[in-house]
Figure (cartoon, rainbow, N blue to C red):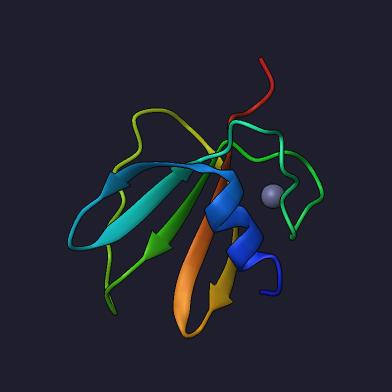
Length: 77
Ligand SMILES: [Zn+2]
């Protein structure tokens, strides 16, 4: 994903643990998959990662250097 470095530097790191990094999109960057602004970008660090969502989310995915990258979108109200 060519925008990855821009996303990392433009967003705000909210969570960094052994399994994932979560960056919050506070500047309305658009998702490379669907073109809509995303809420969070999640970079999975391990081969297997489980995500627990607290609300229903639409997800877009890509891969960066072999790691799954997820973009979350809150459904329209
Ligand atoms: Zn998307």
